Image 1 (tube, one colour):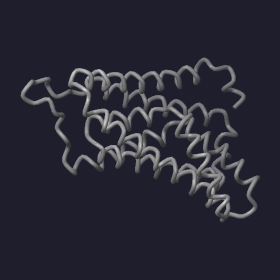
Image 2 (cartoon, rainbow, N blue to C red):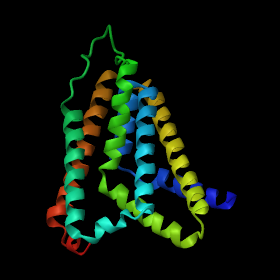
Image 3 (cartoon, rainbow, N blue to C red):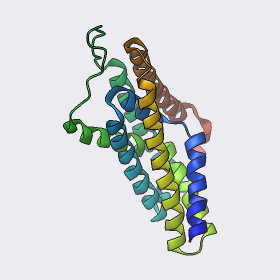
Image 4 (cartoon, one colour):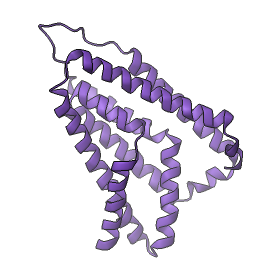
Length: 215
């Protein structure tokens, strides 16, 4: 069981280095704009959605992708969600650059549930995340013979992913201290553009990727 858990930890570390998606951009933006606590709550929302996706995949949600139309609908919904977050981020009002007030206002605790919901749905409606976990659920199910081993594997993976998300959020907070208001506004716009690009890539896959019909 311990070895199985650490196999999951290694996968989680690999994801932390190699997997760059909309959730990462959103975490960095949240930490820089609203502080570490907001980013940590968003990371928790992402982690909860990962747990849900892994559970659905393990319980047999793989049947959903047997129908190519289901895959198309999932990607269309995902693209709309990502575009919506991107457009909102791009055109969201910023604090004015005032020499007397260069600090970004930190939201109150009432803002935190919104950050959780944003992280949860941003990750949940990203089809690539579901297909990724679906693949690894298949790999883990074929490699480990008992449910306890599968649970231990994904406990290590998801726990590591959550921990590294917190670490990235904290590093973004440290970077914030050396950023000027103009640079922070540029970073904010950059995150919005990145989310929009991710959504457009999904739309391209839906309508122009010939391999989709074979999914």
